[in-house]
Length: 304
Ligand code: PLP
Ligand code: CA
Image (cartoon, rainbow, N blue to C red; front, side, top):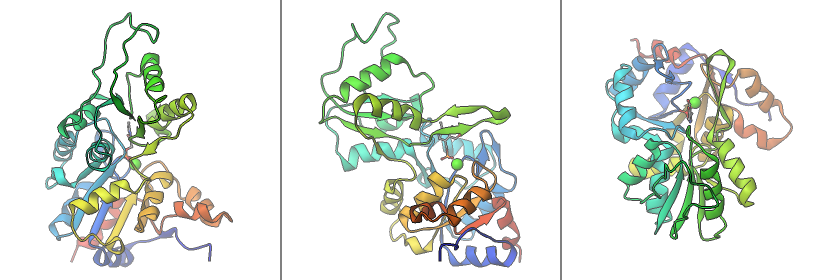
């Protein structure tokens, strides 16, 4: 006990696992692609799973694009059979949460990219208009009277004014505080990083003294979205494949799914082993059941 998990699998073991599962959840960045480049062999794997009648869905914390853009991206990168209803992004699930769970009445103040606003709009959720008045400050700007939620996502045009307005709206205890995801940062090439929306949310948590409700991984809500759109999903039949222990593996554990870490992304196997060997049992939720170097390791399983 305490040392299960992190099983590096290959060959016949992978074949057995793929045969045993009928529902595959793939994280995107670090598993399927790196930015604009598909992981070698990933398209073949995804296409083969779909052709074998497996259910395949994609769960991404990236809130910057509407789902249509993901369909186009999949097609562009050679994933020929991926359709809109297979894509679960933190922006799409945030829109579902606002529409179906809290049934928000009034406007949403959004910190995020255009793609996030597009998803909300598509779900019929009104967003506070962005002002581009260069003279606006928190001292002289107008605040909307009927803001019922603040939603924070990745925003590459973040300003102090947006943070200040969001902090004001959050003074109202009736105003919900939501975050598309809590990712701390995203590694770029050349040792650079992109601060994740978790870092923006943290700023607002300090300013407001409140805690945001997280929609994306590792929260269970994305799996609830999947379950409500694919009837009869049995967690025991699912495999969650991801590259980040603190989001993807924890998400899988939180939802009762078997988990697989692929080493093409953020987390290293040593970090997984450290969590596995930890005396703190809460750390065991980060431990993948299985580990592969890349999802291209699935390919031999499709050869007869
Ligand atoms: N959010 C942003 C803004 C990103 O750039 C990325 C990865 O590049 C992610 C989230 C993480 O996406 P995923 O959950 O697909 O790894
Ligand atoms: Ca990832």
